Length: 337
Image (cartoon, rainbow, N blue to C red; front, side, top):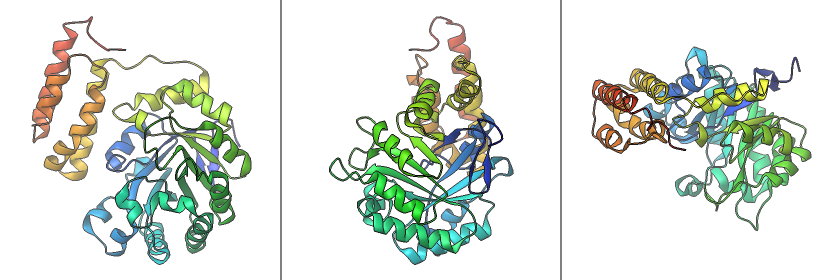
C-alpha cells in the first residue's frame, strides 16, 4: 500500500477507506456523483436485475449510466439463475466503464428472495461458491460480494459464506452485520464481522450501524475492516462521507453542515437527478431525498409536505430557498439534536 488510506480490490486502487453502500432506488448516478464529490473512495451502483439486463429492459439499461467523475465505481447485480447472472456480468463488463462488479447476496426484500436471489444464498455456502465462481471465471474485472451475516440467528454462516466467496475468486467482501430476518431492525453484530475479517485474506468492507465518523473509526479498529461501508447514514447527508474521510485521515471532527449548506446540496442533487431522469420523474423521486436533507432541521414539516406535492424543479427550488430564508431569520431554531 502506498499509504494508510489507499487500498486495492484486485487491480483497482481505491483512494481512501470510505465506501458508499449500494441502496436500491437511491444510489443512481446523481447520488453517486454527489457523494463522490464529498470524498467517497468507492461508490456502488444500486442493484441491477440480471433478468432486466438479459431482456435489455430500457429502464434497467438506463440504470447502468456512469458519469466519468465516478471512478472507481462498482456496479451491483443480482439474480438467482447462474447462466443469467453470468450473462449480466459479462454485459456490464463489456458495455460499461464499471471498475468492479458486485454480486448481491444481502438484499432482504421478499420480491428478491422469491427470485432465489439476494439473501436466499446465505443458507448455502456451496451456492455462494457456485455463483461467485461462475461470475469471476467469466469476466476479467474484479468481482466482489455484498452479503449479510446470515438468514436468522440460527443460521449465521457468515464465516463459511465469506470463505466460500473468497475460494470462488471474489476480490473483496462487503458484509452487513444483520441477518435477513432482522431487515434493518435491532443492531448490527460487529463481533461476527470481526470473525469474518479474521477468516479471510481478501479486503473486507464492514457495514451496519456506522452513523458517525467515530463509528467508522471503530469499524476499522475494532472489527479490523479494511474499509467502512456507509449506507443509510449518507442519505441526504453527504457530509457524513466528507466528515468521515477527514476524521480517518487527520483525526479532525468537522462541524455538521448548516441548514443553508444542506439546502444548497439538496438543490444540486435535484438538478443532477433532473439531468439524469427528466424533470418530472426527478421531482417525484426527489421527495424521499428532500425528507433526508431536511431531517434534523426544525419546522421543516410544512416544506416537506409542499415538496411532496411539487411536480417541477423550480417549485422545489423556490420552496427550499424560502424555507432557508425563513429559518435564518430565526437563528435559534436551526438544527435539532
